[in-house]
Image 1 (tube, one colour):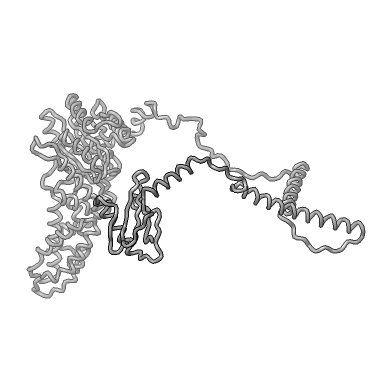
Image 2 (image 1 turned 45 degrees about the vertical axis):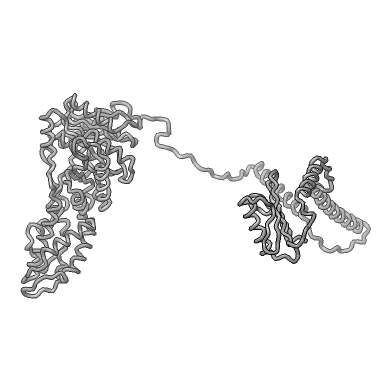
Length: 585
């Protein structure tokens, strides 16, 4: 008798499996698996395999990609296990069935008949209910005529009757409204949305047409300047003045440390030094300064000073105080203030001082223009502060060529054109000119052409505006590096906001690193780097001037300009004394 018979595909999917009544499935399955391994996988020459007390025969059918496997007892010799004869008989039956005409399916066997029968049954039930209702109504009418009317039990209304009654009610209400309209009482109309009336009504464009020179040209700028233009001209000749916005009443705290507040126990930032318990002729130790330095770090961080720089300042202060003996608290306060002030001043004092007017004069004597490139992230005020620098250079008698290098942002070229048009009214005879070629051009090639044009026309300074870009955008940073490396400007200014604090440090570091990494000025033996900083919106930060400390410390480059407003004269140089005073409050 058969212990196991199975049919499976060559992919391993079992299509049919028969198991004898007394067969152990684990044993027979193991026998078949071993037979597959020896016969099919290893390619044995025989089609049979012995496993314990079972004999397994395997047959492949390549046409149908099937495998037949039979497991029987070894002692049995079954004559019907001839796969060739069985397969031939199965194939013949399959061919006969495939060639025979397909019998027509009866309508009663189809799904359509089932649906029709169900529908007919429902219609019959509905007709039956209608007939019973009609018979009931006829009986009631007959009884009322013959006088033998009997009270009939209440009958529930059908859905059809309820729908008819609702329809009659709606029709009757519509007729009433029509009658009311015919009698002269009009039904109130629902108030719709009123159309908005614009000031110009969409008919006149005179107020928004800026194409004529009388509206957007020199005549308009002459009119808008008025007395203001007369006052502006000549107001910024010479070197820029330092910004005094944060110096106010506390400048004496830096220059004169022995004031009344210190005599009375110390005020402002150094008031927490009173926490050090000093007796006469006591030496200050590191244990004394640990809580004090923690508060100092917190104070500097609140002023937007970077954490790394705060730690360095605290370490510098500790080295100046530890191991020294002070007889009174006033002496300790004075030493601490002087030490911190000295450290801040040292950081803010640049390794090299950038004197733009002197450098422009040197370049002019050599017969070439002095090139300044402005770069930075989006929205920090590059174009506006470029116009301020342009006004300052015009005030000092230099001819300036402004390059519209921002070929990406919509309106960037128009913004520079407006600034140049306004400045041209104050300084005619081509003292200032805009060089632009529209949008979509290569900024590096545009700047190269502009510098060549400035040299031919004998312009003294070329101011190159660039598109704003985030410091993590590698393709745009490579494009900026290409511009700087190709044109080799005399001064590359990073324009950053004083409002963002430590974010400006991250921006400046990545801008500088990108210029260094992507520089191609290897033939000159130098690398392109940020040469200076232009700090904008410096008038909006009150005494949180830590960004100036952080940016100068990280790069070692000076803060060349400080933006303090929205007008052309609102451009200053950094007042180190004022910044230190603001930090020491």
